[in-house]
Image (tube, rainbow, N blue to C red; front, side):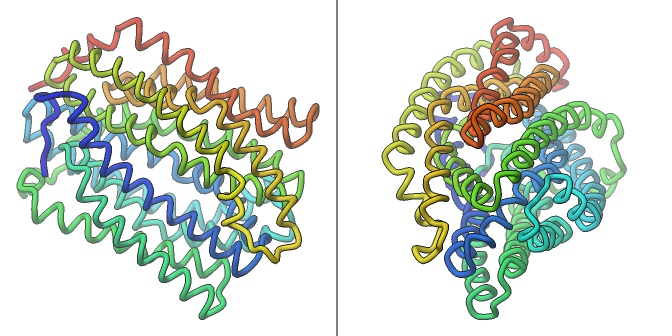
Length: 450
């Protein structure tokens, strides 16, 4: 269902838009969480570490496409808010061409680059082979992931956050069933969960694309509109490439932290993996609220309603702080119990991994308000096409993560490494905070053609 966010009560619109995205985010997390829980319990902590060691590398490989698919949504939201349906369709065509090109390039990069990247990160020898296979399958066969993300971005641009959710739920259930089949029945281990993930993603992508074409007349492209609109491609690239570079910088920071963690052995990798998976769940609410606000800001900028953006932002910022504090409390109360879900009670390294992972979670939880705000400020600025400052924010975060993971790791061991990312959130927030409150983004409304 198409939703115009330029009229009506802002908070009601944002919450209604956020809820399906939040539920979708929960189910999307099931892909990686199911993989780690199943291999951790039915194969062992070594297999858990192998899957977990791939996280930063996979993020690195797909980071540029994440920026571009978000740009699809931003540009299309602005034209939709300006009531320019012709440019909405031209943006869709541009998005399709961009998705095809990057799907091919990234599939090749994933297959060829997996092993060198894992060696660069000093992945422990006992898990590097399985980690390499996992990346090659997930990225080499990542067409489902890339197409789904593109289709979901297009639907979010016109206010429909529910449809992607329905197909994601279906594919998540399929992923769990295939994981159990390939790991327990066929004994395929890490390779099995990778194949299951790829197949489930393809299903969600196909369903999302078919539904979008059949149910939304605004996306039915005329034969004369299939020619590339190079100015539109340039607009998407102007927004998407800096966003992709920011994701790339963040991923490099994650890879740097992972490289340092890898030097502490397989138990540290397993602990870091488990903590990351739980943290992703705990922070989903305000992550998706920030994404929803980006669409709200984009549509209202297109409608030249900057005061409406400012008023809603103040309320959402306060809500973000409250929710992030509640998430921290949840981690303090439930962190250890959640960590134990990921590892078999019979695993010889259970207690060591639990202790290390809980320490990681507790340290991160103290900084959740900074994480929530950096997401909100950066998504708001990006949603309005103000992308240079969020890129600078990413650079600050990268420098902090890399520098502190090395420095604090040398001083305090793996505990010092646990502090690197959270301190990076706090420092990365500063440039985006300053830029938003300067108010220069208001001038961008004049560039959008209605």
